[in-house]
Image (cartoon, rainbow, N blue to C red; front, side):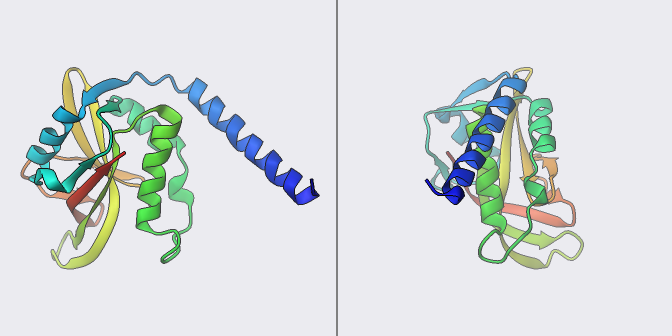
Length: 177
């Protein structure tokens, strides 16, 4: 094995060891939500048709929002540098959702695609990928819109604009995996 290969193997062992420390340190209480309940919840809250909500699993696991805030706080995805077409909004949102599932066994961080608008002028700014996070606490299910590029989030309220920082987010397709 070359020195380069040894260094790569060592680096991967550090990553795996770090992941195991994170898993053991975060004692997340998970709440099960069947896909048969998640789809109607999202459809009703966001006004999306069932065909625009892609659920890959039969069961989803959510944490309360306090745990989700901790996951956001300790995750450093917002520190990554944006790179057009290589590490852009879809990479941020997919990476964050995958890491939440991998590290914490929380698969209710979903990738959403939609249109974003200027909050003040309502001018269309373009298409965007971001995260929608389901939180479950005290018998209540809530949805949050999360921007992994800057760690800003807001609780979604039925019938109200989803305003995160200077933008209005309008999801039109959601993928949960």
